[in-house]
Length: 462
Image (tube, rainbow, N blue to C red; front, side, top):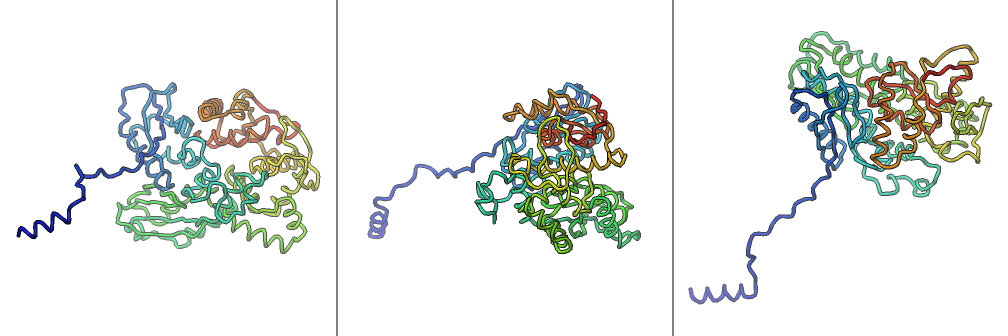
């Protein structure tokens, strides 16, 4: 035994024994994103709503693979409505405080506005390509710092390529998804029309010009009438279509409203490419001329998506292509009035952003349409109202997160009283995109155009 002990001591000689157990290395703490829930002054307890909003935002960030945690704070607001701000910027403005009695409905309303601008969950100064992808319901994609996957570095570095084009290049690599999770009891109800989905697809194509992806269906053991919907990487719900509801109710009350609201998510480069190839086969001269001005079709996809987002149908692709050719030499100055000519090929003297920014290109296409309607005596713009010049100027010139947040709130407050069919008019096309993004926080969507899109005799209010 003594010899055995000696052997053990010799074996342990020179080895140190730690004084205490090693401490496991903790993962780095996530950054916090400040969320403000501004509520009317009063004695109501908003704790439940606060927790529900934090849960909602946490779920959205997990789905989008955003490595940030929401930090929700309830604060007294200056108005009589409920407002939500992310990083100081408006997300949902003008919510009825009476929904406090129905927290789930209030949070659902906030979620609907949030889906218009999911990129705010990325925090301050996100990569514009990632922001574009996230705004269309996809998780942040694993791209290199300078070049999306499969994109030639020379193209990515070219000054005339916009973030929207690069975003479309990334979206083209994503797989669209549309799936319903429906309580099994609801699926088994007698009232069921197999053609309900195909009829909806046909109706939405006639209205929007968009072909939606095939629909997946998964029965669940949930309460009858409960429906969840997954679009791309975002899961939405639950929708309550009624305990006695059937399949038709699921399609009409859950699927249809969502598709109408998020139609821009389902514009796919592959569909645009197929349509362009068919057009190129029947009208080769038009296709070849278009490619001279827009050699990469991602610009066409971004422009089509822009039209869908503002509620314009895009069934007539040849017409859109022709109008894109007509606008090649138009300028982008403020308060500019010009008449189109047929055709205007790309002008080398025009700044690159005027050719590659989808919001600017779309504005010039709308101008052509408005001019044609004016020549035919058809009025297509209802209730045009000028956004205050000071609000527009501050929004365009905003530099830094705090200045941008203040400018967006000023824009939202200026437009809060506009009716749903109002067309908001800016002095320059550069203001269209930032103003349109800010106004997504309002309950109803407003159209935003530049002054140069107006017909010559159009009277604009203030």
